[in-house]
Image (cartoon, rainbow, N blue to C red):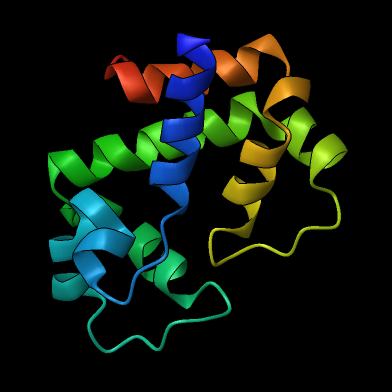
Length: 121
């Protein structure tokens, strides 16, 4: 039960929409502001900007991106199976994973749990 609550908390944390950059980008907020200030959000433009400046990012931001990538990799089959019709962005994918928690495979649950416990990459 505690593991399920921890995973739910991780998904909720990853999906929290906010107008504030700090809430939206977490550890990457300052990096996004510094390197991508003039980039219009939408259609993956912020992601492309962050990717193009990866070597200039803070260690905290790089760590957050690594955790996110680990979750996407570990949960790829669950995303295809459980969230195939969910449009990306706005926290919709994370919400779908949260709603599908009981049906996620153990690898995906472990990756989400690692984020909560602080043991994620």
